[in-house]
Amino acid sequence: MNRRAFLGALAGGFLAAPLVVGARQAGRMPRIGVLLPAEPASPTEPDASAFRQGLHALGYVEGQNVVVEYRHAHGKAELHTELAAQLVRLPVNVMVVGSGAATLAAKKVTQGSDRHGGRR
Image (cartoon, rainbow, N blue to C red):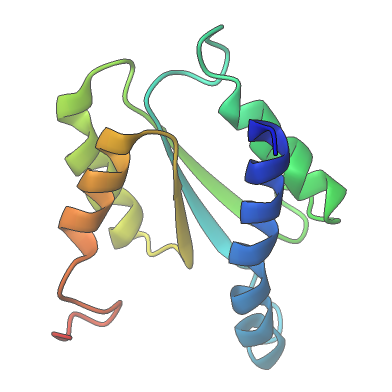
């Protein structure tokens, strides 16, 4: 499976749960946090484009039936933790990350607590 197909499938899987919750909360769009190691326009960062294509293929249009919050680390791994924390504070329904360092940062800021500040 190529990277684009994987990201599209991943986006679909992540969006299924928020839509079930969203059905109970009329008028509230699911919010996705996306943490990328570089800018989406960067030649080394095709993930943002693949992610958008995957959303579109599943019938999601940013601003119409889903909100996507992007954070870019501009190639600086030390920014990942703060950017992941920003997404958690919004709060987002799900976070999609574009690198191993971003994954570790997301784990760090989300581990041990739920969305309401409780401990697991």
